[in-house]
Length: 438
Image (cartoon, rainbow, N blue to C red):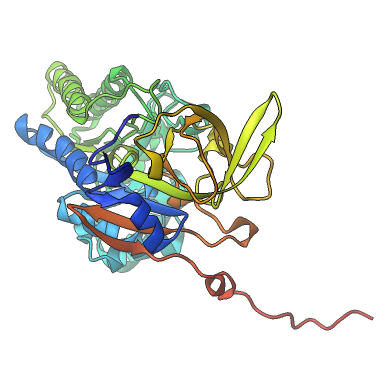
């Protein structure tokens, strides 16, 4: 059984951060997300220390759409990360968490007037501009407030990462950014380069997610640096920041072969340094945005096994007390995971089960024909690498309350998000006031 971070098997049980997962399930209930914060810290330092070792000025920004809450933002602040937010809600949560506003970067392809006003009011460090509509809004807000704002222009370099079509964002046909090849990026540059309040720092690109090689990053860096070189030659503008996004892959199953954080960083830096030398540009500050690669395999979902069903000659089902309401990725992306029976972690995986969720959908299956220990009602199922896009995409479908989230480290554990109650589900509901029709 592959173990992640601080996971171990002790007295037959799976432990994380020195804490028994069966005991966690008993204390906090299930479904339950358990985050190994020591592993998150290790990954964050792996990215940051590589830049420091190579003497390159950089910002490592946690792409918090992967998992956002007050405690997660405070952990990122402890590790001196910057922060990538993509909505007013994430920005509001970050401010509530006391995250340093000057290290917050605001993304999104349809930021509202109110969201942008909040960004100005809180004094964030940078807005990543996605389209011409947004440029108009930024001009209006900055001029009305007479307030400066750092910006990057997000561009699509036409580089397609080897990843799932739904999560590929760097190719030409994308809802994100200004196209680098059809004149849109040049027009955006023209609109902002001399504005008195919008301070253009440079360019941003993001080529996809769950990427296992460095070639795509190198190709994208070359294309974006070439545009920077053209702007310097034609307009005398030299960018000071190049944001190469995120998308660094993690291991979900044995088929996945991710690189260590330092390898991604080293290859990125080599590419940018080579391009800067050829184009006679100063080395820009490098920003990256790891999200999944910081929290993905640090998260483990715990469920309680309930009913079982045998379809003779076809499949053996076990059902758990969660499902697509707390992890929609298997239904949405056909995402694959590995799992184990946490209270039988030392036993051989000699059974094959399809793990069904409890939601009223035939497609609510978390695992298909997975190798597991023999399971029975009351067992605790641990599903690995659910730290990214699990809780953050959770819903109340079927009026199922969202799970609790626990952080563990060095034998200690703390509640980071409390479990929703049935009362929470109806707190915003209002009674019917329309009169019954005759």
